[in-house]
Length: 493
Image (cartoon, rainbow, N blue to C red; front, side):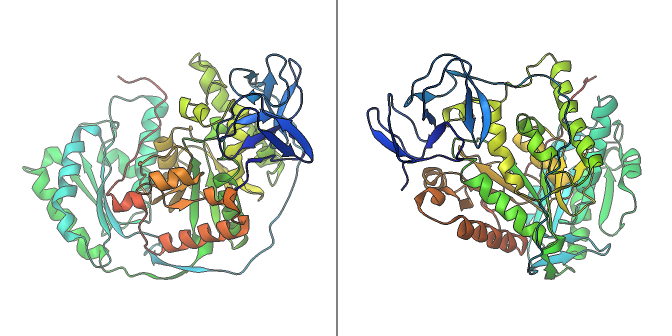
């Protein structure tokens, strides 16, 4: 196993791939570096003497500057590095186009819906219009589990706290996200349960759905029936008969839409798991498929790399707005733009937002940016898309599902059991996490620092995604986990 990695030839730091002891001598590109202190796994050490104000270079890009003189062999982290990020910026389009060569198609076994859309699951979703009926939808879910079987793979309720006492953009966002989920093709049938007096009631919500199949989508207003639990269970039984009429069939992977997200990142995220997801993204796009990258605050500091990969000037301008609108959101709430890395991130070796962002954006691979989506907007262009959503794991993953993702790939260096409305595949950045939390982790990229090849690990992930799309459950599904969260930005009445 390697002791460390220098990611880019221009870097003036290396990253420890295992705990390294004070006084040990590390040979870096033919030059010995004596460590002046212990360096934990995932953390950085200086390869040369740095003077106060010098840039710290990682991934070939600045991730901040040192706050004092730092001799070679020193630990580089939050105690001696400060971000170089500022406020809202002006950007110049300097296109770097790298179109991918087409590769041979691969099929998966999916469900073709009557409207032509494709699903990778065939579930019944129970969606409340308002938080007041959350307990009811969960009770219907529990009472309907006996229906699961055959091609019906689940009855899932998605409680949330919104749908009333909201104003402006928040209310619009709730209605849009709920409509997106109701229309999601992973749901073979949907029961929409309302209360009756809420702002986002069923009659209002129908205006956001567009055309829908009345056999697939059923509605129930709790205040209009004597026993909403009994009536809801009856409707789900009828939906089960409809859903069980669908069968898996071979479908081109060009119809797959995969969301990409990271959480609980560590110093290996940008070295193992995120680049592997980037390779996967390029592989899927080369076969005509679609990927979606989100977490806008975790693009800060690396945004120009994405901007310059935009397929045209219009997309570049949309990406500039994507970034600056989120910065304005921060400042409008008197929050610091760059105060993003969490305590877990820092413990894992991430020192600044630039450090985190340059690792995060590795998930985008090398494909051109072909689409830029507003929060709640459905994907409409094949290839790599950027989606406006925050870094919060559950909010961002729900946003990916709402935009059409069939599956979410979630890389993590710390681990998490959460799920989203669609299969959420957990990818570990390091082998100790995979070994400790194998009940959470679906795929381990930590083997990349144990002499596995990037090509083999990326192909293994691609094969796993095809298997998941064909019905193999992820660990969160086996545990019965399924969650959703809506982005709240405004006033609650």
